Image (cartoon, rainbow, N blue to C red; front, top):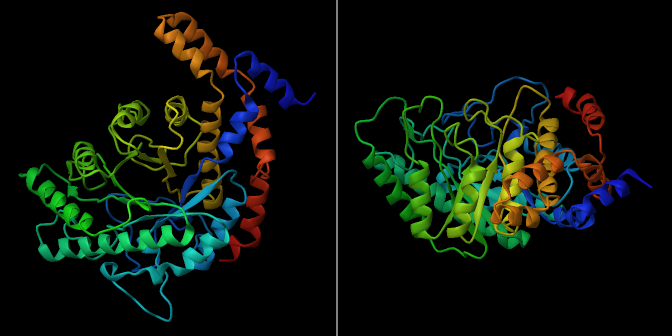
Length: 412
């Protein structure tokens, strides 16, 4: 009898079908962020990273061209199990023959290479307007700027992104999640908190006035609590973004690095599911602040996955990753982080949620506590290895990555 067969029998004692959990997980898509591969540099204007975010470190082998980034994505995806989408920022537009176009005038044709890449790999694309690292970000403000020229520029950028998102959906046959996040805010205490948010609201209204197919494009709005150089005030706060999403029938997006340290996104998921058809997540690992460390199989990642699974919401939550670490091998960062999200989802699928809910409802909190502790030492690792094997990816991936580093990355 194999280790998996033994693990399967142990889980059966808790009423859990491990085969079913593995098959369910295989069909759950995770949208993988392209910007881990080049430290959020992009290809459009060469500006240094700004907007209250940083990619620290200088590990060799960073992708510098679209072809290099695509090759690195291919390598990472070959080691990541399950269904994947690719999440692009607008700054990754591919310009041919020396063409340069402002972000307010980008078109679907500037992403044809990415669409071809996605279609050849049978995966969908998600998209993000890029409202940072650009000379038209004035005084740390974009869609909330009092300068009408600046505000109009970024409104037009987001309108262009809507058209590109619809193009992605039509070409790939999968809905495109288009996420709007702005870095707008102030380093010190503002004299007026209302007016920037009023301008942001007006800008969003103008963007959403553009007709688009809501069955193909899901517009999401992402909040943030603060950023480097924006410690005192952010325009797109949680309260603003949730209120605007609810009022305007778009999808709220929560990044678990964008809240105060004592807040947890896992606790927020059930509330949002009660009031929204869909919700979206950017999964990261904040350490003391929104530091975007590589996701690990840690407590909050597991709890986020458990809230999705125990509330039967795998088809209602858009799951994406969002982190960037330039201090380690970037391919390994991708693989480790996305595998950790998958691992957390499998762990969640292997919990006897029905029994646990029953114990809670009947007030038997003692037995519930003991059952939770028992599940922590169930042979989860053997089920995870079986999932990897049946998904056609190696259990141990670091040797593959180190060989790629020696053969490919070190030559850059």
